[in-house]
Length: 532
Image (cartoon, rainbow, N blue to C red; front, side, top):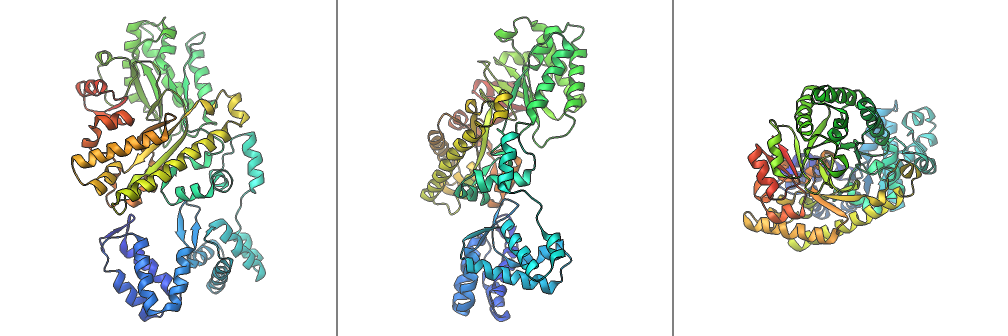
C-alpha cells in the first residue's frame, strides 16, 4: 500500500493494530473484518486508524474493545526517546533475543507483566520499569540465570547526581534517562518524546551548554600560539556538547608571520589541528578566518591577512579537516580579496561581534538548542489549533531554557573553565515552516504571509534571549521527519527564503553560487552565506 502514515507505510500500522486486536481477545473473523475496513484508508495517522478500529471493534466485540482501548491509554517511554503504545509482544521478543528463555516462559511472563501494568492503572510507563517487572517475574519462577542475562546495567539516580556535580559524566544513555527522570519536567519530556519539540543533546541537559567559540590569542611565537590555543579548545571540548569552534585564527597566527612564511604557518596549523582533532564529528566545527583587522589586532599587515585567507582555503581543501572555514568580513568589498570561495561560509560581521558557532552566528555562546515541529502542529490544517499547539511548545522551550541555564550555572567546573551559562543565548530551530504554511494557507503568497506572521509571533513570544533559525540539526530533523509525507518539505523553498521579513527575524543560512550572488545577499542583511 502506497499511503503514508507518519513516515511508515499504512500497511505496517494496520498489521500492528491487527496484532493488538488479537491480543485483546478478538476472534480471527473479527480481526480479518477490521483489517479489511481500516485498510481502505489511503492516508491518515496511526492514531486515526486506531480510532476507526476501536469504533468497529465496539460494534463487533465490545469486551475486546475495552481491552483494546486500554492498550491505547497505556503509553511507553522507550530508550529510543519515543512514546509508543504498550505491546506485550515487545517483552516476549526482547526476552527471546537477549536470553536463553523458552518461548513458553517468555509468553507467560509477558502476559503476567501486562496484567500487572493494567492493575496499576497508570497512563505511562518506561521500558526500564517494564524490564524491572520482568526481572521480578523471572526471579519468582526461579530463573535467576535468565534474570542475570536480562538485567539492565546502569546507575541509581543518586549516583548519577553525584557524578554530574563533579564533572560532565559521559555515559549518554544513562544521562538521557537521568535528565528525563530528574532534570526535565515530565510534561516537557513527553513533548520531546512525542516529537512536538526537540531538546538537542538531551543527554547533556544538566551538564553541558550546546556551543562555544574560542577566541584565538597571540602568544610569544608561532608554535606557542598554535599549540596553546588548540590545547584550550581541546580542554573546552569536554565541557560543551558540540565541537568547540574557533575565531580570529589567522589574525593571531599572522602576528608572527611574514610574506614568505604564510604558507608554512598555515600548513603547521592545519597539521596540528588534525593531530589534536582527528576524529570526524557529526557536527563539524567552524574555524573563523577574518578578512578585516579589528582594533585588538592592529599589528597585522593587511596584505598578509588577505593572503592568509587564500592559503587557508587551499590548505583546508587539501587536508580535508572535519571543519568549515568561515570567512568573516565587514564589507562586501572584501570579497575581492579572495580568488576562490567554493566550499566556504561567509559571515557578514560588519560590527565585529559575531562568532561562527556550528552554522549559527551569535554574539554570545549557545546554552540550549530546541526544535519546534511546525509540521506536526499543522496536522489537520486548522489555524487555531496550530497556534494553540505552537504556543504550548514555545512556553515549554522557554521554561526548559531557564531550567537548563539554572542547573549549569551551579556547575563549578564551568566557572573554573571560564564558561558562564548566564552570558549565553538559546536557539529555537523551526522545522516544517513552509509545509505548515501551505497546509493552512495554501500555495503562493498567502503561504509566505502566513509564515511571516508565524515567525513574527514566535519572535515576540521567545524574546531577545533566543535566536530563531531553521532547524538544521540532523538528529532533530530525523525525529521530526516522520510527520511529513514528503521529507523535502521540512526545509524552506526559495520563495520563503526571499522574504525580507523572514530573513530579518530568522537567521537563515543562505546559498550563493558566486561573488555576485554573495554580494547581493550581504546587501540584504544575510549573516551566513554558503558558497557552492
